[in-house]
Length: 387
Ligand code: LCS
Image (cartoon, rainbow, N blue to C red; front, side):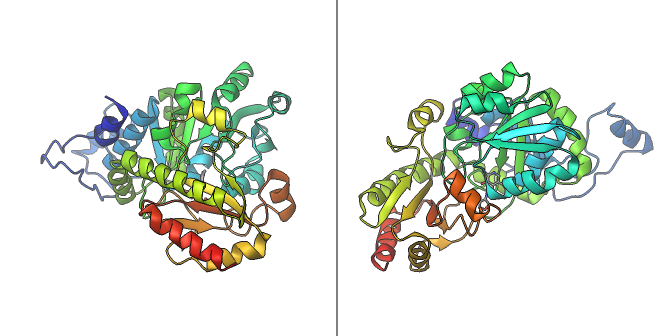
C-alpha cells in the first residue's frame, strides 16, 4: 500500500463481530475469562486474549499496530502521553548508572524530564549540539545506552541529520531514538533512514484536533516485547483516547499537506514584513538545516518560529493583539496556535540556557492550522500593525 492508503486503512478493518466500519470503542477496564483455566492460560501467555486494559485493549493495540505500519516499524506501544512514551523508552533501554546523549534543543518538558526526573532513576543525560558530529562522538561514553534526537526540534526547528546520527550511534553499538512529533510519518520516517526507535507525542498532528493527550514508541518486535514491562508503569493510553487518535489519523495526509502549504505562505509573508527580524523554518533556503531537511523530509511541516523586532515586549504585544490565532501551547491542531517559548513551553530552560541554545527572549512559535491562510495572514498583519 502507498502512504495515503496506509493512513486510511493500515492496521484497521471492519469489526469482525458486527461489521461496523468505524472502529468500535472498547470502553472497558477488564475482560471476562471463559473459566479459571482460561484466565490462567492468558496470564501465562499460553493463549492470546485480553485480560485488563492496562495490559492491552483492542483500541490501543490497533493504534500501536497502525503507527508501526506508518513508521515502517515492526511493532509499537502506546502511552498516556508523549512524555510517558519518552520516559518509557529511557527506562526500557537505560538504567541505573547509565547515560543518555541528546541535543540541547528539545521540547521543554522533555528537557525537564532529562534534568529532573531521569537523574532520580540513576540515568544521567548529556546534552550537546548533535549537528556537531565531533562533539557527538566525544559525548558518547562507554556507559551511554542511547542517542535521543528531536527533528525538527521544538521550538527553533533545528534540523538534525538522522542518517548521520544513526551511523554514529551504531558505531558505538547504541540505538538512535528519534522524536518524530513535528514531522509525523507522513513527512519523515526515521527508521527508513537508520533510526532504531521512534517516539511520538500523539497529542499533536497524529490526533490532530487538540482533543487528547497520548504518546507512542515504535521499534523492533524484540524491543517492544521488552518494553511491555512498562504496562506496570501504569501510563497506559485510554480506549477513547486511542479511538480519537485512530479517527484523527485517517486525515493525517490531507491535514499535514494543508498545514505545510499554509505554513509556506505565512513564511513568505513574515519574511517580507519589516517588523520581523528572523524566521525559522526548515523550508527556507537560508535555514542551516535546509539541505538535510530536503533529504530526510518530504515536506517542511506546519510549525514556524520567528523573532519580532523589539524583543520580548513587542512579542507579547503582538500575540495579545491577535484575534483569530489562539494563544495556547501544543501544536499540530487544526486551529492555529501561537505561543512564547521562553515563558511557556520552554520555561524549564533558564533565560541563560535559552540564549545559549538560540531561543531568543522574543521568539514566537506558531503552529499553523488548516484555516484559510488569507485569514491567518490578515490576523498576523493586523497584530503586527499594532506594535
Ligand atoms: N515531544 C515533542 C517534540 C513535543 O513537542 C512534546 C510536547 C512532547 C514530546 C511531549 O508530549 P506530551 O506529553 O505533551 O504528549 N510539546 C508541547 C508543546 O510544544 N506545547 O505543549 C506541549
